[in-house]
Image 1 (tube, rainbow, N blue to C red):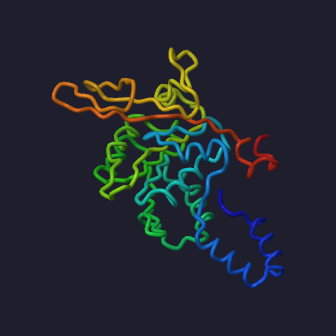
Image 2: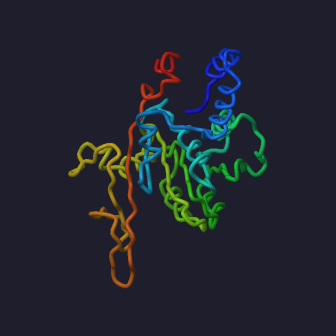
Image 3: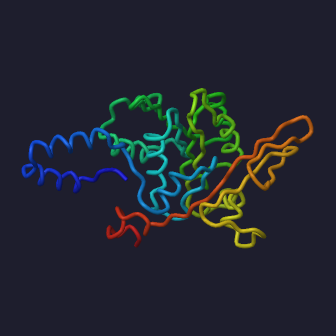
Length: 260
């Protein structure tokens, strides 16, 4: 949730009526406020979930791209936000600009934004094999914006570089998406099957954590996040969740005709 132009106009109207002390208090409050706060409801739930991998969305207008930008600007130090095609990154750039207030710190040729000691890289992999360009480049936040338009193999490949050398820094993956419109995009339904597959034998509630591990090259669901030994290896399960969001959860779009 970022400040809108109407919010700023209202503040300007009230400023002449504030005392000197009230203005000083307002200055201190604004100086300590984060650049971005999540909307109450699903966006806030996705923002605060402890899941290693979070799916968010399921419909247009639920604040999906904004969540990825907000996490990168407030919770992480080295992030990368992917779209399938580079031309689609314009919307992400516009969202960051809206929150930050300018394009200061943005290197257009490298598609890297540096602000408040944080680095936000923008990437794309339209063709098979393009994902290898990002091989070996660690990030503590990886966002796949509109993941249902992406290749599952590329998404899983790039998750391998979710890591950090910064003590105490949390690492996580965010996948935002609308319902798949192609056969190739249906992998997201299988990836989040407990939440999205109505025929799943053990369905999960929105925000509920489930744990998965790779065993003999195959992903399996396990009971919890406790590490276990498999042969000579110690396997650490990864938590996953899905949180649905709709346009009705986004007050900034309600009443604008976006739903129609």
